[in-house]
Image (cartoon, rainbow, N blue to C red):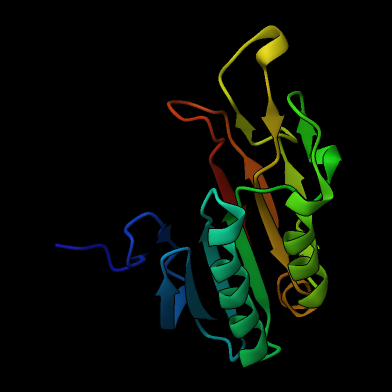
Length: 178
């Protein structure tokens, strides 16, 4: 028996659960993303949610950026995209380890700018990933983020993300309050 308000992508690495007041209209997915179009029960407006679990390799992430471009070009409806991007936007999103190179960040930054996405307000730790080492070998990064377009914020203006305490994983889980 499955859950009525749940969906998993083809790689079984992305799981999405939602509240009863969201009605799933349709969904599509690839190995690195799962996109679901929702309607709020009793309202006419629809919005899209794309959840990401990006590959570690910059070359393999190119497929994800193409997927997101295809989703962005489908419509200009309210859109939220978030998850583990396995890269940072700039050097401020990393503490420790080797310096961040522009080559690492350029594709992600281009994606955010090209699709007019903005960082959704969050509560909790700035860094969402830790390499689980200490002292000089310790690295913190902000790999898990949630972005929205302006149309999404007009529809659901009080939306935010809560970064939860890391337990049993090197990533901090998060919840989105819409």
